[in-house]
Image 1 (tube, helix red, strand yellow):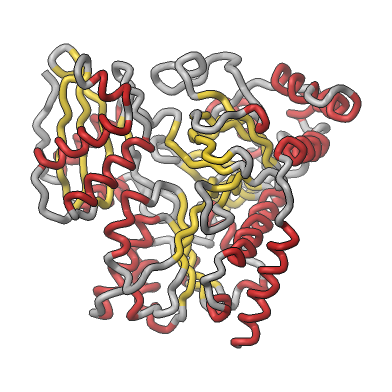
Image 2 (spheres, one colour):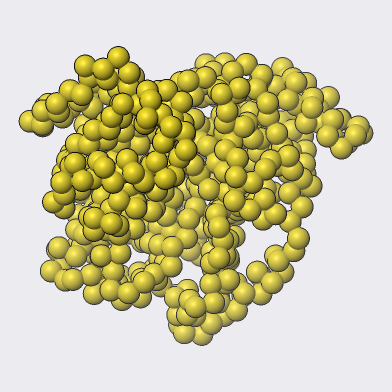
Length: 523
């Protein structure tokens, strides 16, 4: 087996040498676009929006005419609009709606704010694209020279949704993680944990129990999942076997591949569960596709996947393009990959081999290295606070909580923020999930101070319209109970970082059912 590990690592290293070539982002994206538009030109969507003319522009007119036509002819869609106008037909069994053929799989996704599930089409082409990018990510490990050959013989624990999908009206539906795990290539199955039987389990609590019971029988080298659920599982395993760290059970655990939310607020608590440092690799795998991943140890962010079934557009996340509720205006400014700038915030539009076209995925990103096309996720178009011009992003919130928790030496497991009316003006109400003792006033002042350092607009408005900040500290379990009540335990589900509109009252009502009375800060 040691020989196998050496061969794998050598093969990975050689592959990375071959792949180290100059990145021509525009060329890769144009090629991807032509493939997508050519494949979909005879679908109902393609015929409605003149895909054949757009394809001809890519072949026979000047370099960017194809994009000008695409932008002019095809409207921007959010989920509700594309579902109502197009995807609903696919769910009802129609063929050739937005992508050739009949869609057999739909990923259920509620993001972090919607009450009802979204049905995201997952075509056979998209499944292959996700597998291809996943393999590329594994191959990128060759750039992490400190990882030993033996690591590549260890188990991959992938904590996701059930692979036992629901069958309804001629299609299957479930979490994307469950769909992809059910289609794992045969050659990878010997490394895959928790294995087919446990992976099918739909009861999240029972799945964690079953993994815990088997944990000491596995030699895990890689763990993949959403930080909150992986941390919860590791704590459960440590408690069950009465050991000090997860390395007492999995001594060869060296890599944690995480995504879904920023890892930074979880880092301090997570590292208390380890006996020695491990390598963290960030990924951006959404229900709509595998968008980006960290490609090397020194990466400032995640590199966009430019040549595998996704065409990207970028809308500057400004007041000119979005209203106060984070909704895009009609015909906003949209840019291609070669037109973006580092340090500016953009809302992401994607067109994919699953039949999403100019689809506003809801995430905001920032380029940290344009040459390498490396991005960081800064938040959601509707998950920001700007009651009075403070323009507070999720990125700001994550960083403030991380810095405050480090200074106070507390483990913040979850948090959320609500914007509220206060004394004819405004305030922010933070709910912090930690099991460590902490003075709410001290925590409030520290978060407030950190935000003033991180965000100039916030600092200005704290002297004017944003009159106060309130902090309520809660046991971390309260956040998980709310998610359980919403049917959002496990898989790719995460707690919303910002509570808006009806979610504020819903959250406060839930707290009352738990015997927690929150003093109203509203005047």
